[in-house]
Length: 128
Image (cartoon, rainbow, N blue to C red; front, side):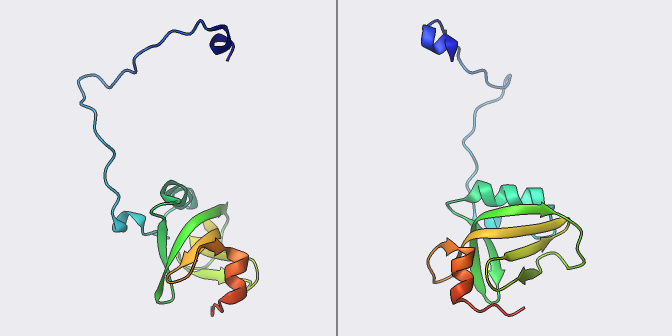
């Protein structure tokens, strides 16, 4: 910041990998958005963050597609199989991963608008 304020910074071209051509980022397909709950919570959390807000990470809630925009990871031991859903019916909606939980905080159910988990749980009955 001091160099920027003083005006004595010099431009430098960004170095590419030696003898490697530059490529565009790969196209993201629907299959890339599907969450595989048997992965570690850190990987799932990064997938959700990387795909938000568009196209969004995808999972299933019953027969409907659930788009997940934001979540919080928690590493902990549990006895549920990966992908199992747990909720208190009021504010918490979480899915089991292989080494912890993913707490969903911002979501959109197929055919509904995007909303926070507490708002979603007030209007949608989830049966365990």
